[in-house]
Image (cartoon, rainbow, N blue to C red; front, top):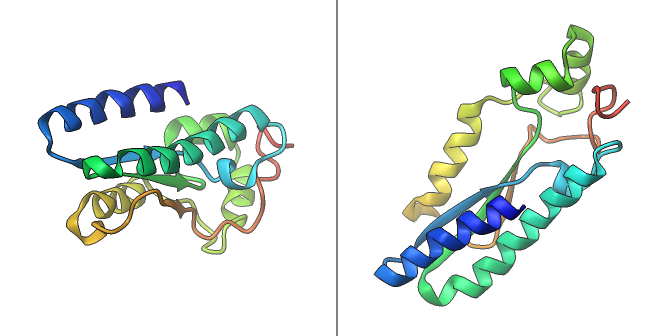
Amino acid sequence: MNGTFNFSRAVAKVMMEKKTGGNIINISSDSGVSGAASMSHYGAAKAGVINLTRSLAIEWAPYNIRVNCISPGPIETPGVMEVLWPTKELQDRAAGATALKRFGTGREIAWPCVFLASDAASYISGANLQVDGCAITAGIPGSKLNP
């Protein structure tokens, strides 16, 4: 959460000095919305990012700075797969914890970021967009961090 705050503040300072306005998009997690057993510290920090996003959106609106957040669910990346779901059984269980019954991709997180940064989202600020395949459980049972 400290990194998100420090980076947001540094970027906003430049936007304010140049009077350009702009967009800041923070990344949180579904764990920040619903929590997850054995990951309370992570969930609490990610919930903080969601609240920070909303608070900064209110504070910086007079400078025409929009601040939004994306909260991904299970996304297929090498690091995450190796750490949280190293076996086919755990991967199937994680994918099964979404209504779409699959992992998301990095591209499926990137496109919502493009949208939020675009003029198409010019009246969206302080929002948390969950990009999670419609998670149907809190946390993902059976992961190495959530037995």
